[in-house]
Amino acid sequence: GKGKDIESVKTRIDELGTQTKASTEQIIFDADIEIRQFLDKQNGTSSTQESQEEVVYLSPDASYTLPTTCRPPRIVIVGMLIDRRITEDRSRRRAEESLNIRAAKLPLDELRVKELSSCEPLNVDTVMELMQRWWWNCDRVEERLQQINGSGETKCDDNTEKYGKLYKKCFIEAAAFAMKSQRDRHPNRTVHKTE
Image (cartoon, rainbow, N blue to C red):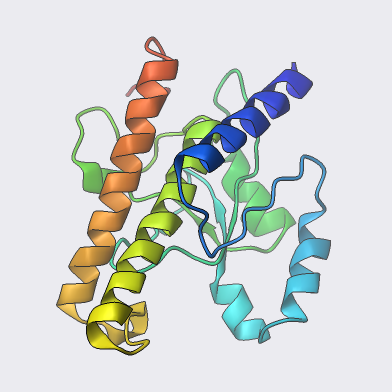
């Protein structure tokens, strides 16, 4: 049931916390959070345009794919639409039509794995693990770059090919590890969508 799924995700997040160093990004897990109210509160702490660009609702049906050449958005909404059967376009419609939030899909095509595309709906725990590891990998790379450069010149805005490759590696490592964990936990359910 729904309660069991939520408890399963909370347990997996706790496990991840023991496996990785805490990211500078805060992960908020709330089964009953009112998304609009939360985002309005966040807007009070940063500029509205910046905050709109830094918020995405993950959906495998989105037309926009998150770039791998920079740090992931600051606020990522994992809608936890738990479907036993896939309902195409459900999460994208919820994001864009109901909540007026930009929908984005994970760049899973970058992994170049047969039968796995950016349109693949993933288990919630896999998405949470992937995002936590992606932020954590980016934090580590930026810390190293700051030590080497002696400055804060490590953001996506720098738009240099060197940084883009480092950020891409952050995503690929995070996604590969999350997908391996997914396969280990659910050996018979690694891919949900078949053409």
